[in-house]
Image (cartoon, rainbow, N blue to C red; front, side, top):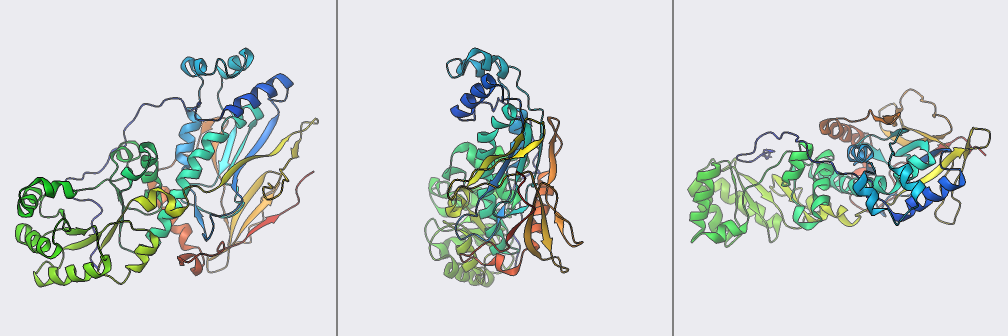
Amino acid sequence: MRRLRVVDALTIPPKVGRVSAPSTALLTDHYELTMLQAALAGGTAHRRAVFELFPRRLPEGRRYGVVAGVGRALDAIERFRFDDEVLEVLHDVVDGPTLEWLSTYRFTGDVTGYPEGEMYFPYSPLLTVEASFAEAVLLETVLLSVLNHDAAIASAASRMTWAAGDRPCIEMGSRRTHEEAAVAAARAAYIAGFVTTSNLAARQRYGVPTAGTSAHSFTLLHDSEREAFTAQVESLGKGTTLLVDTYDIEEAVRLGVEVAGTDLGAVRIDSGDLGLLAQRVRAQLDSLGATDTRIVVTSDLDEHAIAALAAAPVDGYGVGTSLVTGSGHPTCGFVYKLVAREGADGELVSVAKKSKDKISIGGRKYALRRRNRAGVAEAEVVGIGEPPVDDGDDRPLLVDLVRGGEVVGREPLETSRDRHTRARDELPMPARQMSRGEPVIPTIHLGEEPH
């Protein structure tokens, strides 16, 4: 099968740029600050506390999830500052002593968690935040906002790239979501195996490779399809991708090869029965001598549509709406709960929410991926109070992200991308199934909750 190049004409390697970094302190909920005010007044704000960000379950029918957004969360922690402009917004939200405390806020605690690209399952301790209650509680909303969104996108993207096999997937959903969500989605999709994005802000901020050529409007601008193709090929080169379904696909393919020659890079089909049309276009291209010209398909694709096209002569997929909306699951249901706090004797005391259907499990957690001797994952093992014992084939999951308020867990996107591939390949074969099912491995808790 012909492989689609990850870049198209005029695409150059991206450079990560520095962008303005406004405070993230107002990306929170009102009640976080009123809790802070009451805790400061009551003398409990400075108690040592352990918060845990975790999922109670996977989105319905999903067999695994993918961690994404950790790098953006670390950025958010660094930028969580209450400058004069931010404090002005809060002057009638909290009292004077609370405003004074906020004016010097800096997170000085520790954060450990699952690195980006890792798989997760129910009750995986994705982030553990340990600091004073006052410092840690304020991060709840922004951390949940970032990880709930990005992990939802990465989880959908992972299913799509697994269904696609060695055929590349291109992210092109910017126009289908909020403009800032589009940037985060492009980043998350890249971690989970997409090769490029159409979003230039993702290129600037995170170094995600970008690509693109033309839309139907470019063809409609010209007096004829021939003129449009000629202009595109002369400007972008014969390796470009021509959109061939503006009028008649068969005629457009004939014109494309006539204009660009048999070195035409690719054609894109954006409507109709994609599998049937791909077969017809492949036969036509081959009959014209354009045997190396690739076929890219777009048009409301999701993981199920991609899987259905596995036998079609398709060389790449462009995915938009379904990807940036999490393919039916736009959030992961992560929660952020206090699981331990300092007692009167200075020691940590386990605490947990016990309300029906919304329980949390008290105590500080540690996690590893239990694997058999063949390296296949068998369980998510979570130790309460102490790390579970590695039997020799297992893999620890937690890494240091912040130590003493300093970020220590940043890594290149390529590292996260490679981790995703390795971690996904560890999963049992049923994880590949697109049908609805239960988590592909169980979560096992070891140790008793301390009381």
